[in-house]
Length: 231
Image 1 (cartoon, helix red, strand yellow):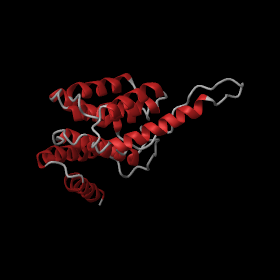
Image 2 (cartoon, helix red, strand yellow):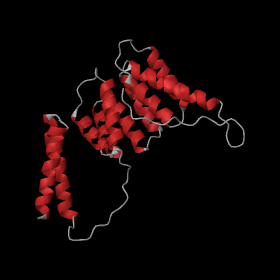
Image 3 (cartoon, rainbow, N blue to C red):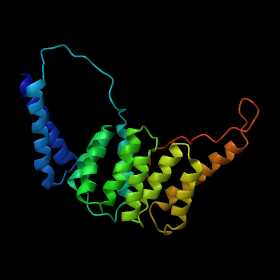
Image 4 (cartoon, rainbow, N blue to C red):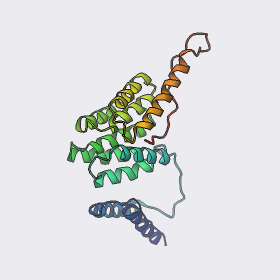
């Protein structure tokens, strides 16, 4: 009975990736191989008769935020080529909070094609997600490579600015957003959202300028509350 359930779950997972997430048909073989590998691993190491031992998840599951980030990235990258199988798989992993695994898949994508700006951008987002919203040198490098490959894309400066703001580096993040807004066409679909975000950030900064701390001195600006990106 256990093996029937395992096989059923594998089929459901394949169907979800292939038809719900709409993975490219060329990637179905890779997805099937990954699922079969998982079933084989369970066959070698699984022990369904033993009692369970729940453990704390290695990474914070933040599916809704990840899904919003992926949707925003896709909206900002309409001029990018169609996502490859690595990007599809990485997005599926990120939606389930498996950011480290997503970043590893994307590392394979950029090794295969260093000019894949969308993969570099997704890697930056995955690394920020893995660090629970804090930007790291590795994430900055990924965003920088995305900007080098696609200098006219709004994605890299938008997400790098967002990550900097969430990490408390408000001035740096604001500078990136202001520069992006200045060079965005008036008809750009993301412009109104960016203007709104920049206005909210400026309002937050203005409110912090006169806020005293507990000792009566001026308190340093705190990071603005992070929002799910939705250009």
